[in-house]
Amino acid sequence: MFYDSTYLILVPALILSIWAQSKISSTFNKYSKIYSSKGYTGSQVARMILDSNGLVEVRIERVAGNLTDHYDPRDRVLRLSENVYSSTSVASIGVAAHEVGHAIQHQQEYRPLIIRNNIVPVVNISSRASWVIFFIGIIMGLPFLTNIGIVLFSAVVLFQLITLPVEFNASNRAIKILEDKSILYENEIVGAKKVLSAAALTYVAATLTAISQLLRLMALSNRRND
Image 1 (tube, rainbow, N blue to C red):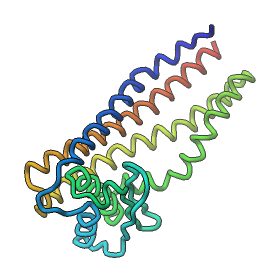
Image 2 (image 1 turned 30 degrees about the horizontal axis):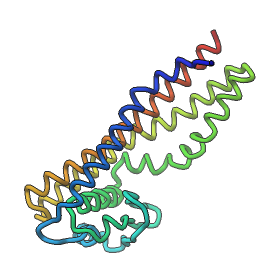
Image 3 (image 1 turned 90 degrees about the vertical axis):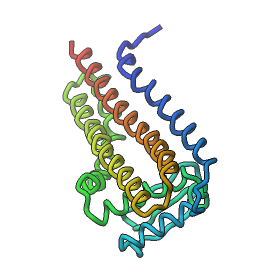
Image 4 (image 1 turned 180 degrees about the vertical axis):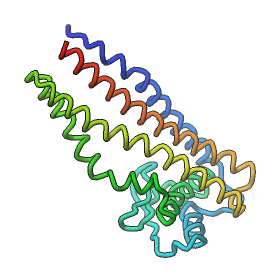
């Protein structure tokens, strides 16, 4: 059987990804059963924070799925999953506040967010084209094509690296707002922090996976050239 030793490069990232997904799932489930004393829902907290920051024009919409929450800077819409939108749990409030953090970043023109948003179209194209071009280069023995594939995939790595400060900053903003506005009590803040910290691990895992994939492409290219 054919054995490709370059797959070993992906093992640490794979292990971290599995652990991160398990961590966010178990942590969110745990704190989704702990309800805030003040009884605010995720959507109410989001509206409260948006309005207090002058973002009254940002709409809040309910979307299907689990942990599909996101802020859309193009349409100025905050989309919250069903479990977050109507739930009064500590987990839901933490996630809702995190997504509002992205809206505040957009309002304040937080540079990493602006850069990330601007390169999204490029990354969408390069992520699809990089593998095709790379393996055509491998099959046809054309090093310049494999190099183009590697350069294109580097855009994916750059996107993931920029995503890290964007997500960490949004979580930090969320926790500070929840504390400053006394939306959650101190013991509830602890739970919200754990949920957002677990979510952050998924972004770290995605970044490590992208870097590992890039290293694997480079290893395959070097092996072919040798």
